Image (cartoon, rainbow, N blue to C red; front, side, top):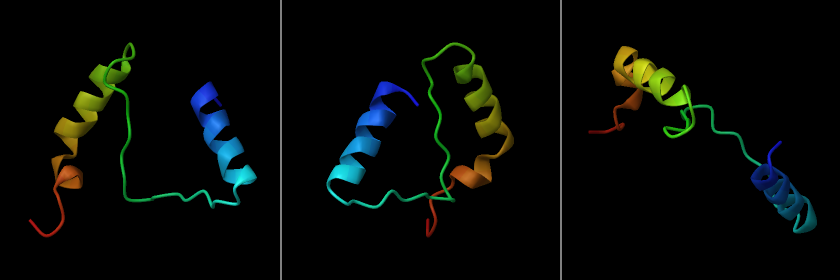
Length: 55
């Protein structure tokens, strides 16, 4: 884990806050090396997954 993740984990344990996992989300960085190209490719190939439900 990175420093951010370690702080979030520490906070969750210290204050008895649950950590939740969302299985219907996509998260990626658009500013770190090759991730930008990979995320753009994924988006272009999976546009329906990015459609806002109910719209």
